[in-house]
Amino acid sequence: MHVQNVKRIYRTSILVVLIALPLFVIPASTQNPAPTGVLRLRVRVKIGETSKGLARKRFYLIKGTLEQNRAILDAAKDKSVITRDCFYSKLGASPALIDWLKAGDCESIYCREVEPESLKTVPEFATAYVAAEKEYGNAEIGRKWLSNNIQPELRDGFYRQRQNVLQDLLKQAEAQSGAPVLSVMTDRNGTAYFTDLTPGNYVLTNLLPDEVGPAMASWNCDVQIKPGDIATEKPYQVSNRKDKNVKCVAVEEPLPACK
Amino acid sequence: MKLTKRQLGSVILLLVSASYAFQNRRTPPKPAPVDYSKFSHRTPKHQGECNTCHKIPSRGWQKASTFPDIADYPGHDACVSCHRNQFFKGVRPVICSVCHPKTSPREEARYPFRNPATKLQFTIEFPHDRHQDVIALLQKPPTQRVAHHADNAQSYNNCTICHGERSIPAAVTWPDSYVPRAETFKSSPTGHGSCFNCHWKNQEPVATNCNGCHKLAPSPFSSLMPQRISLKFMHEGGGDKKVHIAECTTCHINITKSATLRGLKPDVPITACSECHNREGLRQDVSKELAAIDKNKAFACVYCHTSDVGSLDPPASHYLIAERPPLKRKEIK
Image 1 (cartoon, rainbow over the protein chains, first blue to last red):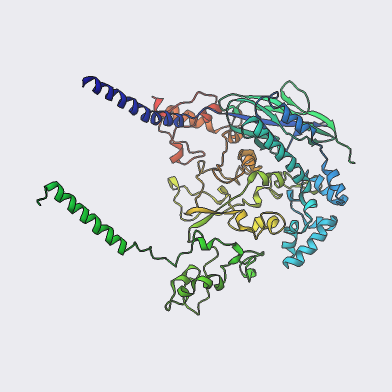
Image 2 (cartoon, rainbow over the protein chains, first blue to last red):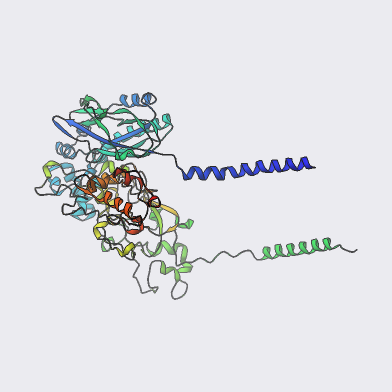
């Protein structure tokens, strides 16, 4: 009888411990989240004799080392790229539209407001404006809404075709690395932050080469993230020129010929 | 036959249970009466194609809007097709009060569309990352620069397309009786104006694809003001030179990676402030207040904060930029 009681108490104790265990384990893990890190990018490029922050360019952070992500980086390298000017000129865009896009480093017509002056100089805008004004019955709405009346390919075709390629590559990268690919865009000074990063090895990349002056620049670098807020320390410097402070240097190639 | 007490108890229990079950069978629970003064998109029959009821643009949009818009309630046809009984019930049918402040056959006046007094039923889907990609040009092209044009003026396409200056929110009690100036805040879109510039037609989600942006929320909710941590910061401030007017993503560092509004936080690191406000030889606004806490642990930091925030322990990041180890107030003697 006594032995049976002891066994019963023992069994009950184990059950209580097993049931209660998650109550202690789960709150402990939620109260003390794993420490994360920050990567502060500063991207500066030299074009001719001028150095400047590389503005409005998107960078990606893929989990794993360069070696572990070799297949996806090779796949990205194999993608054929085309310059913005070439893309739109092949579509038959007017030189005025190509110049308008180039003046603002725009991949699509959305990137800046079409000012009244441009309605006179860019034929595509003039045609869309006439149609929009007629449709909406108002000159100001006609101008502000003219992107609704421009052929989609001329409107943002270059951006969309790059996005299609990028999205394919990102899917592959996520499948291969088993983690979401993070991305940020640089501000006007070429600064951008990746935050809440799980410590470990990553690849910093722009996946598809970007037009930087007369060249196409590709960045693919190993980055090690350590726990702690390093946003207040020295930024991780990225450039197209070697320098003692630069940690990630671009591989540059001439702009591809427009065939 | 004589029943024992236990048997008698069982028989009584059986009879009570049977009686209860019988009563329940005869009087099934009545459904709650429908409140026809309240319209809900959660009602399954109110979840058809949007243009079944909402005409795009609304008839006579010119009276309510400067652009083609969904600016008014659906016409009577949209309701009468199912609610004929409610429509012609009594002198003042309750159902009319969904749209009309006064219910009378001769009263056409309607609440503003949408009625700001009612709770919101839809959340908005907006990918900041994609919009950052295509808009938000950094500066005017060189050929269009104007002499004396302030470099930090935001007259180009950028976040201000949607987030302009806003007036001080009414009916809010501020901590310390502090009344922020209008330059403190930025607005959020409350209409279709900035969306339809590009999304009226051709570029999805277009105006007729309401579900592209409006997602039915699990339950109605009130619009929430974002919590202000540094209430004394003014977006349009920064002295005579208005140096606070910068590219938005310079300070709001997580916007360019944000694919949804869910869980979106303003996320401004202290380094965005300290480059000017805690710089050797320039200003020491953070370091000074941390030093004041050393002398008096009850000191409230008030340069950026109101006392509700300024009385808390300064975060480690603030000590880091002041190049000091973090401290808790309770550790100060």
